[in-house]
Amino acid sequence: MNCTFGFYAAQEQYNPNELLRFAIKAEKLGFDTIWSSDHFHPWAHTNAKSGFAWVWLTAAAERTKKVSLGSVTAPLLRYHPGVVAQAFATLDFMHPGRIFLCLGTGESMNEAPLGLRWPPYKERLSRLEESIIIIRRLWKESFVDFDGKHYCLRKANLYTKPKSKIPLYVAANGSSAAYIAGKYADGLLTSGRVFDEKFSSEIFPALVKGAKDAGRNPEGIKKIVHIITSYDEDFERAVEGCKFWNATMIPGIFEAEVYDPRDLELKAKSIGREDIVKKRFIITSEEEAIKKIELYLKFGVNEVEFLSTSPDQNKFIEFFGKRVFPYFRDQKRDG
Image 1 (cartoon, rainbow, N blue to C red):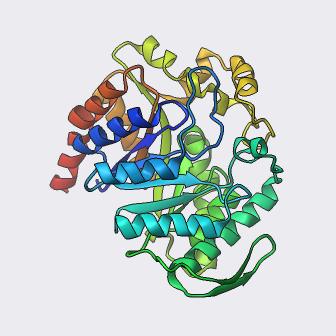
Image 2: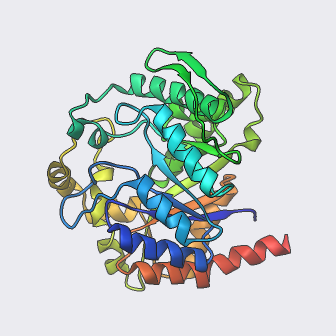
């Protein structure tokens, strides 16, 4: 089974120094990739943090040796796509072959607190498409002109270009973004929150259509699933560990203009235990973890990326590294 495993550094839930220690340990225990969130405001208020992804990625790349690293970034109003291109070109120049970039349509919490408007989804999707084109051109070409609906470039040139080809992924939880991923991206990232419901019926067909319309082979597009995970031998403790992320299960929250973490936390009180158990990856044993991962692999997933909200993060890393990953490494060797 050819699958890689990612560790998600949640800037919202842990301070940058804690996350750095987790990333170093994750590499040592067999995680292949380190992902970082990239938000201005967090998803909750109590005990929340708000580290800046790009600064943290630089430190993490310096303190690790071989893992690939990147962030899920929304190039809307807060970031011009040319600046995103420059940041990740620099990261790859310093750490060639170890950097990736995942682009998405974002959340209000990244734009509204800065006095920026919150564009409707159709506009955000259009901005995403233009951003991909701009970033790719700046990484390869010199003195680029671009006249788009949302962004312009005037003889823009990155004097420090990437040393290697940076994988560019698109985050998609619906058909429109999945189509763009198929059209342009090296990979698609989708949430475990919607995977079981939409992947076969909506997301994957749109990915295939986008690829075929662009004359690309959909089989060559990496498929990555992001799952909010909590591990503990005690099931109820594992469930309790997930509550920080309850706001992400509020219906319609990703489109809503809600950006104050205090409001998000208040609204999240409507999410009950049953919702957590149904939507989250709650595990107490390696058998449960292996079974769940195998289900994703049957759908052609190439990477499972874990946002661990476990009661004990170090215990989570050790559990997967020592008791779960060896099973899949052995399967790969046997294959």
